Amino acid sequence: MIIGKSTLRIANGYKATAAKNSLWYIVARLVELLINFYVITLLARYLGSQGFGVYSYTLACVGIMVPLSTLGVNSILSREIVKGANPYEILGTGILVRVIGVVLILVLALPFIQYFPVGEYDVTSFVLLLMVSEVLKSFSIFSYWFEAENKGRDVAIVRICAVFIGAIVKIILVNNNCELKYIISASVLDGVILALFWSFAFCKQVSSIFKLRISFRLGLNLVKVCFPLLLSSFTAVIYLKLDQLMIGRMMGEVPVGIYAEAARLSEVWYFMPVAIVTAVFPFLIRDRKDDPGQYNKKKQDLFSLLIWMSIVVATLTTLVSSTLIQLFFGDLYNAASDILVIHVWGGVFMSVRALFSKLLIVDDEFMLSLVSHGLGAIVNVLLNLELIPLWGLEGAAIASVISYAFSGLFVFLMFSKTRANAVMCLISFFTPVSWVRKMVQREVKGLV
Image (cartoon, rainbow, N blue to C red; front, top):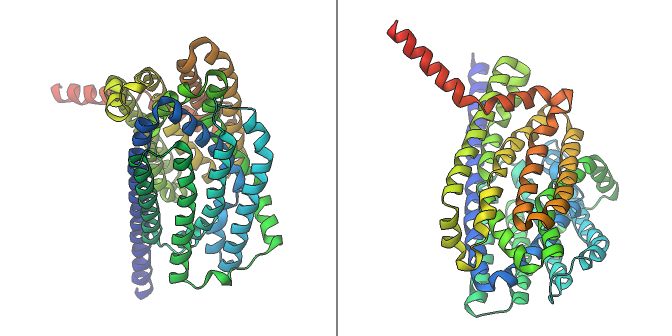
């Protein structure tokens, strides 16, 4: 009996800790989104459509390179620490792998970046500055130790403080009418701030960073294990960001800025489905083993929730798209309204993709994650090549929605291992019909 009560207290304590950490992560992410969104709207107004187009184009270039520069090892660092690996060796090796990855990808990618010039701006130098920032951000690997130790509060505080200081710097630059090159250079300061904050937090909680150790054998093993996840992350970013590079190449810097604003406003709420799925994930793992019936019911309920939450958001955004663009970005970006009306519907499929990604992990189907993202990237590139010349920015938005739908849902109908989940997802689109039918049945029973 004593053992039973003790076990129950431990279980309840674990759930409370998990819930508290999840709340801290959600709060940090929400604050980051709000601060970054404010800064982006400020920069959009200050730089104008041309300058902001170059800024967005540069971010898209770096956004494609960053997943490759991590060499995939970020995904399992906290897992290895939880399993009992030497944290000094894991973290030291992780930082080295990240730095090597940034330098390697930068060398390989520079010729391709030069192939995508934007106006008279030296985009290559802008990309170099942002990648220097990524080298400094390698110290954010310390966050995986905090996650492994269930210290969500510390992670949230560091992230919020860093993004707040970085935002203040950019606001000061705007108020002093600084040029675009200085605003992009401020990103290097973002990296310095993160490096200092994470190093200070780690030293305060654990010990000096000079105790970190490097193992080349461990580094090679980590890269080998994570290679499929690396490719999956890269292909996912391809179909999320490559459209902006193609617009810059085919249409110029002004259209890139207009499209980027519509896409950013369309995607600002994406953290919600991710937070919901993350919160339910541990219960999905448990029910898959202990209660298959409950597991399937939870999947069906989650698909219905995510789909109809996304449809409601997309519908409301469609109705007020012009007002939103005017409110946040001003008259220079009026053309973004039509793009937003199209692009926002991709959120329906991005939401269900968040659940599919977790289900692939539950079912140990890592390669299907890579295949689905890869096919989505191919579809996105082919559609952009066809639709941008025909319909311009609206064509790019249509290409994005179709590729999201393909990679987020329809590709899973192609494989027997995921077909049941895909059919379950399709059924969820008709959830309101089921609700109405049940209501009618209750009313009929009441009359009888």
